[in-house]
Amino acid sequence: MNLKPLHQLLRVSSHLLDQAASDVRDTDLAPVSELIEKIGRALFEIIEVQLQIYEVQPELRPKSLKASSAECDACEVLTQFMIEALELEDAGKTAAAVAVYEEFIGISLSFAHREFARAQVRRLAPPEVSAR
Image (tube, rainbow, N blue to C red; front, top):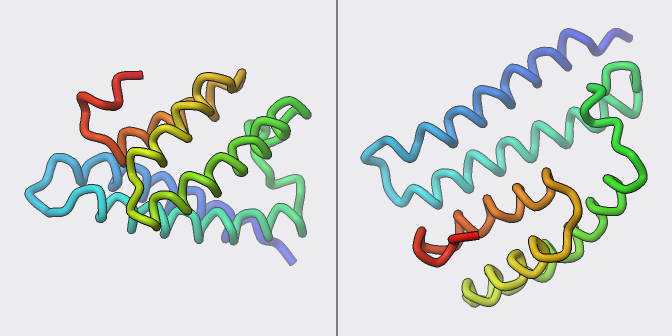
């Protein structure tokens, strides 16, 4: 079974969705944060399929995803912070969720993971609040 064609389609799809999430800010559609979240959910679903492909054909996993043990540790820590932040967000405690992400930003050694957390802060907080 060759999953490479599907893998390539999913990679293109994820790049297009990423661009769409970026471009939606320049439209008159509203609410922008809700639209970006919907696109993000679609990206998450694509990533889930990609992870299944990598289980079956690990040679398709991009080199950029072959994380070091430090990167894996950063993923685990970010996951714990995200669980807490998402629960707060679901409870309507947006400021507390932002604080959780900012706490992570303050302790993480991983640039990529800090950038992800910063993106969550931008999504949740007005520009003047998300100065980090």
